[in-house]
Amino acid sequence: KLVVPKRGKVVISHDSFRVDEEKAATPDPLMGIFPLGCGFDEESEQATLSFYLKIAKRYIGSPMLSALYGVWAARTGNRRLSLEMLERGYGDFCTGRFMQTLEYRKDVFPEQPAAGPFFANLGGFLLGLILGFPKIRPGPDNPQEWCKGPITLPAGWHSIEIDRIWIRGQPWRLVAAQGEPCARLEPIGRA
Image (tube, rainbow, N blue to C red; front, side, top):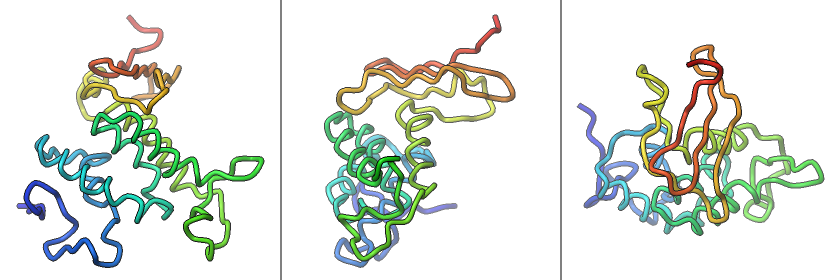
């Protein structure tokens, strides 16, 4: 049996976790909410989101997970925070006339070389757009049943629409509209 370490309702990184330890702001417990979908109860999920979003400034700017902060903030229902976290966690990594996505944010890690394109940050952004904001949880059932909850998008966003996404060798359309009870996956060219 897997035991998930907690402090009260907050999922923590390990049993001896201290908020003042090195790398304490690393959002690994948030990965249990998305993309892993570990099925925490709503109270634990919200408590964990609240805790780690409050210390996000200590992590954002680091490579790998920063791009997912917009999705995690959206899971709290706060659209403005979602937009802010998306800008800080992904937008601020993009630079130059070709909008190259860097490994580290230059303002947070000025000692690091400006290296890119960094595909983990690009991949995190795309993962958030395709699965995170739409709350899609792929599984063995019908793809139309993968859409798992109400849609909260960053402030100013109205929808995420993908005209063609391939699922099991067939084309589908994805629509995730702000405020809708769930996203829609629609088969293309089939009755």
